[in-house]
Figure 1 (cartoon, rainbow, N blue to C red):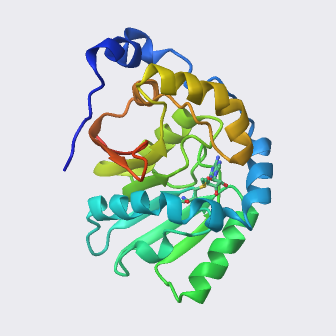
Figure 2: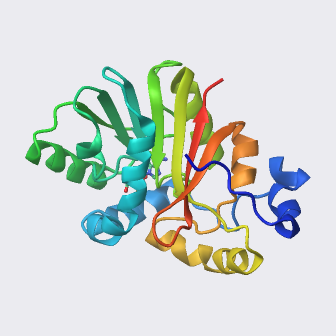
Length: 233
Ligand SMILES: C[S@@+](CC[C@H](N)C(=O)[O-])C[C@H]1O[C@@H](n2cnc3c(N)ncnc32)[C@H](O)[C@@H]1O
């Protein structure tokens, strides 16, 4: 498995600088109601816009998860249920999402496909209604740059994951390349209108969420999305 991809040394100080624990994660701030409005508008076109282009990353994430029979999996931000048919049928999946219109699509999909091991619940990822250590795997595909407070979501994900379990983020993060990073910051106030911040700072996010990755792999084409796997200590 490809592990950490280190940026060139010139960029390293900016990326992994000592202020990672305190610096802003993005130049853009959004409110929960704004996110809900965006996804209400996106629900009918989501699969077309973000289905095939982001699917290689979803497939790679599922491969890396190595889900065992009986594993309890939490998918945070299940959306239209686009991952539902990828899970092995002998694990138990709980999918949560804030957006009722997105969940409606997910309900249709799992009914249409006869999927019985995925249950869906409306819930805010910053306030998960599960006891500590409920899940073996807690997975957030293309969600962490969508939510208003990524660190609060990651902390909740860590809380509901059992010790030794896996916490997995699949997401686009700000590039370590200065020119790309500048561009991603410049467009972030606009990309939030199509559902995500383009400039989320991965090292700052990991430092502030207090999660340690065991691997970071680049996925999709172009390879500007990251599959970040962490083990709950
Ligand atoms: C980009 S979609 C990802 C959907 C799916 N996981 C995928 O692989 O395509 C982001 C999802 O996160 C959901 N979301 C945003 N904020 C949330 C929150 N605070 N709690 C739970 N879900 C949230 C949105 O409603 C949306 O369905």
